[in-house]
Image (cartoon, rainbow over all chains, first blue to last red; front, side):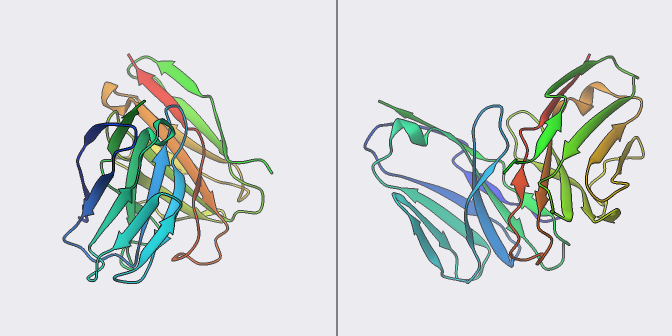
Length: 112
Length: 116
C-alpha cells in the first residue's frame, strides 16, 4: 500500500507569514500533484511535478519534488487570507494504474 | 465549458437502503474516476473507467459497491445495503484519457452521502 503523509495537518497563521507544507512517502511516484480544495467543492489542481529535484513556482507558491521522487513540499510566501483552504498532495505511480494516491491534507487558515 | 457535475449534491438515506450517485464528466473525456473522501481526510480511490469499461476497480471496498458507465459518458455509482460507515463525500473526476501520466483530472463538487 502506498501512503502519502502530509504535515502539518492544521496550520493557522497571520497574513504575511511564510509557511511550508510537507508530503512524504516511502514509495517512489512517477509524478506528484498538489491540489487545493474549498468547502463543498472538489480538489483543483495547482501543479504537477514530474522530475526529481524539480522546482515550480506559481506566484507566491513554490513546489519542490524530492530528488528520489518520494517527497514534495509546498512553500507559500507572504500568505494571504485568500490562501485559506485544504491543500492536498497526490501521487501517481507507474504500478498503480491511473489512480491518484492522496495525502491526508493540510488545512490552512490565514488570519487577516 | 461545463465542468464535471454530480447529482445529487446531498443524499440522506437510512441504513440498509440502496443509493445511486450520478456523475456527468466533461464532454469528450474518456477517463472517469470515483473517489471517496471521509471527513478530515484526503480522497481515496474507488474505481477508474476508460471508456465504458472499468480499467481498475481495486479501490471498491466490498461487493456492496458497484459502478457503471454504459455509454462511456455518464457514470453511476451504486451502493447496496448502505451502512453508516459509507457516509462520506463521493467525488467524481474526469480526464481526457490521452496519457495516464500527464492527464489532469478535473473533479466535480461531490455528493455528500449521509447514512442514518
